[in-house]
Image 1 (cartoon, helix red, strand yellow):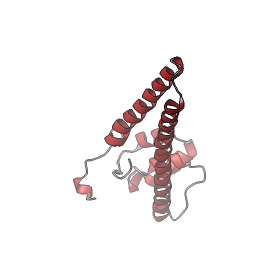
Image 2 (cartoon, helix red, strand yellow; image 1 turned 90 degrees about the vertical axis):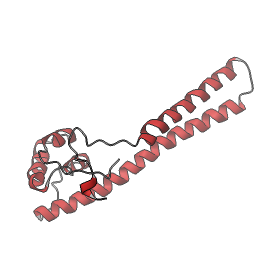
Image 3 (spheres, rainbow, N blue to C red; image 1 turned 90 degrees about the horizontal axis):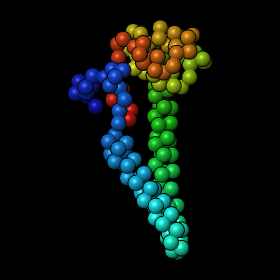
Image 4 (cartoon, rainbow, N blue to C red; image 1 turned 180 degrees about the horizontal axis):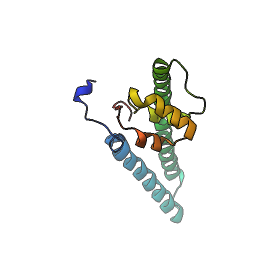
Length: 149
């Protein structure tokens, strides 16, 4: 991607959403689960056969679990890739490895810092145990990440 064509990014605008996933699929998955639960309750109350409503509810529950877990797996993979990139970046800038006190969440937040403020902010984050949100708020020269969703 050409960085020139990307909009600027800041603390206020760095969070990204995929509308199809975060809105449409979330609503559809929740809707299917709710409808199958209603169908199951109605079948129980009317003494109707339960096989089909139970199967439908279980399939909807499986879809919800897959929906949640797949997003978690994708995020973990992105976190590992970003952490490796940031470890290399820190090493290139300092000649040293990250302080062991830094957590993965802190390292992920540091990726937004410009090279000029990266090392002092990383040291401060380790020393003061800044939260990821505090790290992002402390950044004055934002380095955008347009790839993470």
